[in-house]
Image (tube, rainbow, N blue to C red):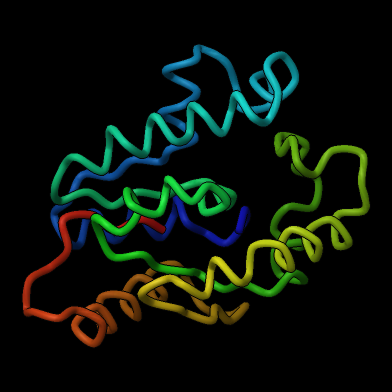
Length: 172
């Protein structure tokens, strides 16, 4: 979900694993030469999702990457084949904590002109069945620091791998 800490945690993990780090939203903005909000406003969510799929397809071809994806990337079945090129981590953060983190953030197009908590609950309700398909599910506690969360992920990786190799990428 948005506001779960994917970019922060992914960046920390990449450094610890000596991987490159990419945030699909940043790559999309660079590719489109527009902010995510501008893409939604001018071209719509479907166009944004098309760009998201394109970027994920390109990134998934590489090895040794940690990738922070948009929270809705799991909505397209075609994205799953790309996500499954690596280890999928779900940072499960309570809606209340996400609300605290996103209060005052006007850059999120899916949260415009709406009750923040109600909208986040609806998004999570829609996405939860897909999020539960992640390889690794971490329930995030409000007091945990990004470094502590990254350490939890690093510690948990061997429990979900079929071999002792690290995955080629880590979509978050």
